[in-house]
Length: 439
Ligand SMILES: CC(=O)SCCNC(=O)CCNC(=O)[C@H](O)C(C)(C)COP(=O)(O)OP(=O)(O)OC[C@H]1O[C@@H](n2cnc3c(N)ncnc32)[C@H](O)[C@@H]1OP(=O)(O)O
Ligand SMILES: O=C([O-])CC(=O)C(=O)O
Image (tube, rainbow, N blue to C red):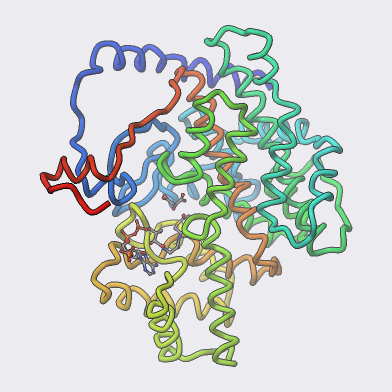
């Protein structure tokens, strides 16, 4: 679909000169000071990346090209008035910077449907792994194995000029995103449905087809997955999955390698795996209490016990956010609208009331409020996707939209290899004016 690619190039190529001008004429301008505290706490707040797709505000949350989640839910095209926006539209917005019309979105759906063929060896790689390997292990191995198809890698080897890198990156990115629902659904059906696979239906939209291939072919699950794919798609450039994809891509590793690396970061319990941990933790609580309808007091006691064991409360806290995550709120509103009474969702809502004051009372947690992962699992579970060890794969499918749109821009701007500096701990001691420490 050359139209989308041309449109992207027309708009984004204007920024190449802007980037060069900043680099050449304003390179010496100081934009921030870095404190020892920032180095010791994971570089929080250090401006060091260029990401156009979305920006995170600590208090109001994520904006995709300036649009909040409620604005996206109102403005992005949907298949029917009652439904949720299609993630294809968010991808268009992140890539091109404009709200698409319905035809633009349907064109992306069609384009991805034509690119969705997954080579047999990818399924063979998945099948070669034991069923005990985590779905995220299978997912990242499958993505790596698809690097055989990288057009970027072939073009690089053939000696293509660097100003054209973005073009083959775009082709890889579109092929990769198009194939993800098939791969995710294959892993799901292999692990949880006796290897009974369901063929894709090219007439369906990207998220709708995922629901269909997973075997949850209802309008309710399709609506949920469209919402899920929109809210998890991007969270500016500094989060672990986005930053890793960007970093690995900066070495001109092909998009399959870069995204697979990002997925391995997403698989960590402090990042995307937290959505599984939330459900694991709630089920552990239910089992320990032997009660699937725990009282507020029970939940308070269990939360405090978890903290006393030196563990985190999954789904709460954030590296940047300092208020309730608007992605949590969007899912909570969805639940309020469509779900009348459900024990698991009631627990999630009770946690929302009781956990923040407990975390606040520790005096050290900077953000006691819930993040996106606190809600997502309970919605999936309610709609019949009960296999929580799979949830991070769904997160990964969605996250591809943001990190891979950014990767195309990285190559268009010609961003360089990323290489910050490191120093021994002793150096920081000296900078702080301390005498050399014991190490
Ligand atoms: C999609 C996403 O990635 S959203 C995040 C998903 N992750 C989770 O939900 C896991 C639970 N939350 C956490 O572990 C953290 O809040 C993180 C990883 C998200 C952010 O970490 P940080 O930026 O280091 O948070 P913060 O500066 O508030 O940490 C200060 C202290 O509070 C602790 N803390 C932060 N959140 C929590 C929590 N939910 N439960 C218990 N303790 C917490 C930290 O572990 C740290 O303890 P330490 O000083 O003993 O090392
Ligand atoms: O922003 C972060 O660090 C983590 C997060 O919520 C995300 O990546 O969605």
